[in-house]
Amino acid sequence: MSLPSIPANYSSWLAAIKARVQAARTRAVLAVNAEQVRLYWEIGRAILDKQQLEGWGAKVLDRLSRDLRAEFPETKGFSVTNLKYMRRFAEECPDLKFGQQVADQLPWFHIVVLLTQVPEPAERQWYAAKAVEHGWSRNILNMQIETAAGKRSGKATSNFPSTLPAYQSDLVQHSLKDPYLFDFLGLGEEAHERDIENAITRHITRFLLELGAGFAFVGRQVLLHVGDQDFYIDLLFYHLKLRCYVVVELKAGVFKPEYAGQLSFYLSAVDEEMKQADDNPTVGILLCKKKDKVVAEYALRGIDKPMGVAEYRLTEAIPADLRGSLPSIEELEAALQASGDADDA
Image (cartoon, rainbow, N blue to C red; front, side, top):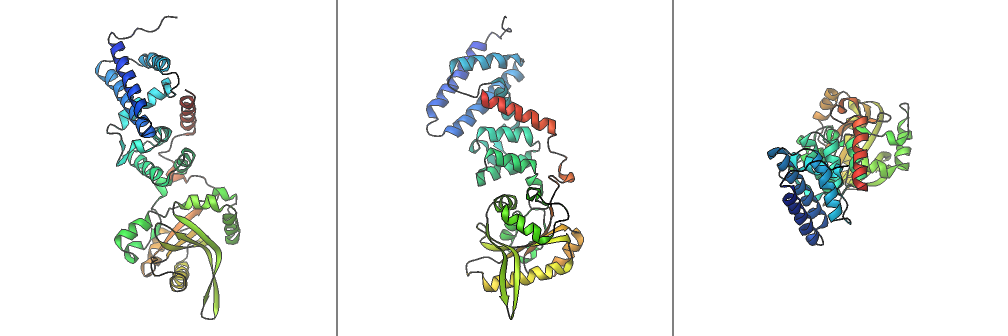
């Protein structure tokens, strides 16, 4: 079978591509990942230029893939599918960045996941920055995207602006989500608070992942002895980045204003009995099955302890109002299949 016709200046263009590949290989010992990502961007940019300026067709990619594989048989990544990802990468990241995040700090297939599964540039920037900051694996990045973590981050109703310094308020606010997704606990909607606590303890690693980076588990039903009475905190954490204790109270029902008063009492007790001199003020998170946002805002308005109120979901994997911009099942399957093809290339 004869090969499709190739433009007259293809050979010199191919030679330039080969030279770039060879040059990148010699520098890869110092910065393998960064060089690979930048090389892929350069190849993608070169493909775009030829297609946009000289009208080259898509079949050139078939020939380019064969020629690069023949020249560099030990180097993976030159499949037609991966070349298309390179072109898309260069087209959608003309300055080699996802917003403020330099793309070459991410592994290549993290970039592919972001390109194929996150259509909005602002969301891509968020996921890219978090992946670099927390060292997310590709599986973790996929899970965070599929559960719409970027849309839930910082959404809890809180009084942080009035109870914390501005720099700390923003940091704490973005450490909370709304809603929290607890479908991994394997519980039905009828579950009681103690059932949820027990399940969280059994699945503490997955629970910490849902809470977000920085949370360290201290204990459940933590005793506070105040005056002549004993009180028990549902769940107690310490946040390594915020440098403070975090009290989490679970309520298997609709939010009530009196819950805020109870949580405020616990925060005062922890500040007095457990907080060290160099710790920041203890933060409270009240997790309810359902909340009225206005009621929650009113309840927090007169409280001087920093706390947030958020909902949790036991059975719904992704809230309906967060699904709009996520890829369809068919699109996800196609993206994963394409990613697999590139891995095998």
